[in-house]
Image (cartoon, rainbow, N blue to C red; front, side):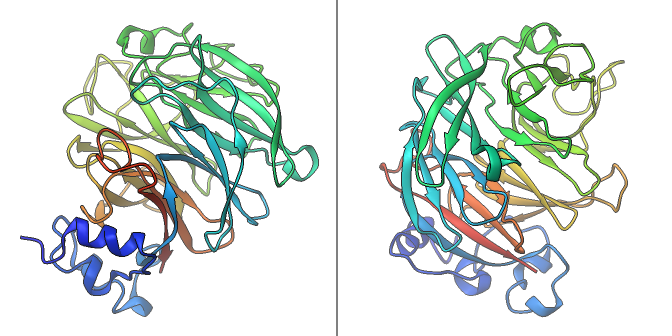
Length: 375
């Protein structure tokens, strides 16, 4: 039996209480895989690099905050709400102001809606930001102008991505090469994931004007294929792309993405021995994970889990392609964790919750942004 209930902790956070890992977070919380996690805050000075040492709720009153995109200068972030299509400006101390909505957005009464956001690396000059969202004909990637206080100038740069109630993907991220990467789900049609001419079940790589990026392996938008519902994207210190995706009923995956590689779905779920398929670097059961986002800091992959209701820490072993032992934090404490991002210039992560939906069962406005301090 837990000594501190999920309901008690959530009420404390809603009231604006700042919680540390000591006591309230870790007392009686099951599923932490190492003693290191149990003592992180009380022995913070001795904690290994990249280990969470404290957590604080900095912004509340949100409803399914799906994407977080930081301005290049770290002055603030943009946070999207999936079902209400709102975009919020959120400062490092948690102050939030609505800056607009994304036009033509629709829900799917499931996982579609306003999803990923990415800020152009050249924002200081061009003021461009990018969104992935569901529209009437399918899922789109759109560009808007953001002047620091409001959004304008909606322009579609890619459409024709099939939508469904579930499996819409939706994550956006800029690579070190300056191109925009996007994850797309199989739209509940698993055959699309193996079709090189389909935009679904893929990681796409495109220019900021919406053209296939030069050097793509098949001469179109497709960068990798064989994905079921990928929603995690992050680049490591060597510029390599890592990805996390929802499995069907057995295994969720953490993958190291290489151009042109086939990650197996629907032939493989998790590790398999089928020729031509690329195996994941780590797998979890769907009850432990169901990952929506990843971030990389201090050569560690952090993975936010929805059904698993936890944050996974997965160290990359130096500059190899291998990963070490995964450790779980905050198991069951904050409910469903949607997005995790590294805060620019700080040893911090931001985590968003997704409890104000059908799966979380909490009312509108129950979601929040949590700030995690890294040792």
